[in-house]
Length: 314
Image (cartoon, rainbow, N blue to C red; front, side):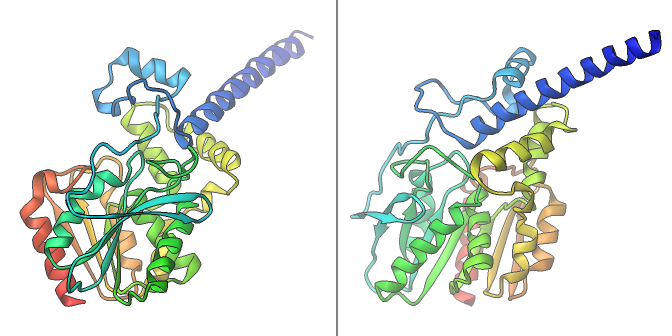
């Protein structure tokens, strides 16, 4: 009888822990994939948090205000509203005697104004540019982000728009989540850009969530899988299938893959697996002393040289 009694107590405790962990994962997943309209400051990166702040996040989640444009292009530009799975806002900057148009896609927690400096570099090289706010960011509709899964539909929308205007030389540039959205759109929608430039795409949705927990020194098992499960359920897709490493097998156009050797969000193993799976002509360039950040901060001269050389070869 005592064993039965203790067994029930242990089961009750374990069941309660299971419910608590799933509840925490549920709320974390929602905050991870939905921006708030709060004016509170965005939660700092895990490396900059104190132990108390990390513990607070463990129970209450991150503060993720909707990203808003902080600056605007210095060149004359056209603001476009395009209907995709959500209404998205874009800036189109046309240059004289353009060699083609580069569409720029931002990363997680970003918006199109963060692409202005890179847009300027492409413009100096003789290309028109199109800067895109993914759904939930900037002036695009909603507050939801799916880390590149549904954003891939918006890649197709912008690509199709330029095709309909008569543009034949369309290049796609994406950083982190933006790179992943490009890869998924080529895989799912069979779009055919002239070439693509990918900065630090993650290998799979699970790996990027796992890395996020690891950076915060939080238990990766089983919380990473729980967050992934609930994140997919809340956003209407199976998150475990979001796999850029597999998407790479469908990419046959010329590809430049860029990576920072000190990236704590994306491993070199992930990058090498993606690179190995790319089917077309390809090149991988890495930057020393560089993490998951804007490569122009520490590598402006080298980045411009890499981009220029790649575009000339396509």
